[in-house]
Structures are given as structure tokens and as C-alpha cells.
Amino acid sequence: MSDVQQRIDELVKGNRVMLFMKDNAQFPQCGFSGRAIQLLKACGVSDLKTFNVLEDEDVRQGIKDYAQWPTIPQLYVGGEFVGGSDIVTEMYQSGELQQLLGKS
Image (cartoon, rainbow, N blue to C red; front, top):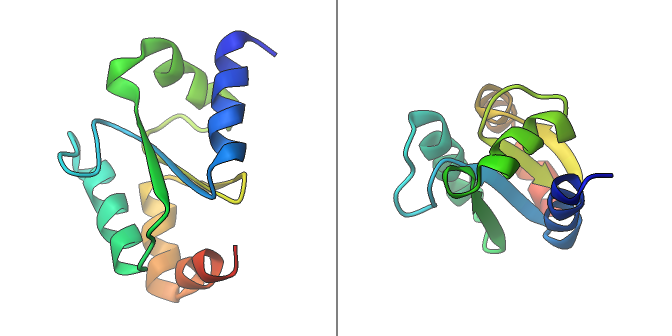
């Protein structure tokens, strides 16, 4: 495992709710990242950790390989990849996201 993959793995496994996004929760730099933050807040997540991929090009590219997922944001809960913005939105609308976050 490369150094970048190791760093990503530690972030994913070391935080219950981890979102790799563009910028931060207060000032998301894209609508998809902003939407993911809104949905997580609506679920009452208090232990959300974020990583700004705009500040680290290695992680920005490495996270795409880590989950074999081409886009950002990427949400991880309990060390498992959940999905990107569209999947998170669908899960929220169906109630799955609330269940996942409540039981993790």
C-alpha cells in the first residue's frame, strides 16, 4: 500500500463518519460537497470529519483509487465506502442514510 493509500486508510478507519470533499463543511467549493454536508447535518451527525482534497493533490487522486470511485465527495461510515453525492442523496430520501448513521 502506498503512503497516500495508507494515509487515506487511516482517515477512513479512524473516523466513524469521514467525508472527502472540496474545501470544508463551512465553505464547500462545489454543490455536490455542499449537498453531502447538508444531508449529514440533517441526519444530526455530530462526529463528522472532513478532508479537503483541494489542499492535497495526492489524496485528491488517491481517494479515487482507494474506493474505485471517480468523483468527489466520497462518504465513508464505519470504515466502509458509502458513495458519492447522488448515492448519499438517494439514501437520505429513502431513510437508509439515517439508519446507517444511527446504527454505526
